[in-house]
Length: 341
View 1 (cartoon, one colour):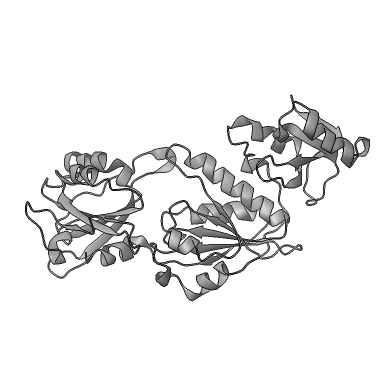
View 2 (view 1 turned 120 degrees about the vertical axis):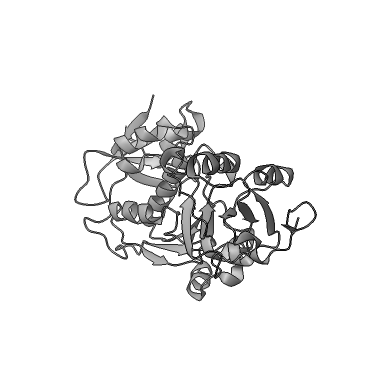
């Protein structure tokens, strides 16, 4: 059962004693307090001690209760109240948000603006899990890495919003460092909308999208005269893990799939059976593009899933489908091209 204690009835010593000797979980302890956020606040306010980072903040009973509905203790973003009635680029306490694209993984492919921001020692940088370690190593400020593991993407997104809200409350410059480009299958637009609900208008720094840079780094031109005259970008996962609609086969078309390596076999089967792709359509995978451990693996619709399993291909990987895959890559024995394996 949650403990909500009136601020005037408890002094610091008693509070510390409660933490040390009570059997209550830290995430359930709060003080009743007046609102200090905005003119649109609702009802009574409670001091809330985050059990994971020790930060103390004022939140509604609804926010605190929502943190008990999941195993991570993350409040629902729907309960977090705004710091301003209208979105501002910077709050009165200096809090602000910038979305930054990290590109495919090579630090040399970061924009100069991104490098400058990441070297701010006072920033709170919330990093996508798949951002390369070489780029994370450039960060001078506080780092939090999103736990977007398979099966918990939605909860991890809520954690990102919670961290951002806490950072803004502390007057921090919150940097959302996203793999690739923030607005290409990166939920960048969704995050801008959510941050507006917090009362902040985000700035956005573009990044080099893996949709085009990864094939280039893997020596695969996405267009080539006489081979492919159109390119389509797709994601391997729709909302709530669903499979997106398939692009029907066209001989002179290249399809680039992002975030799809986890369902590669299913994807190839569906492209053949539902979208009319010939079984011998070339497929290339560029794993960890731009990083020292980059690998390029090539097969076709029938063979690529087995080849990927044999070589333990992992995310982040970019999948390229179409005849352009074979334009520049030299095949080894058995018709399979392997680079960096």
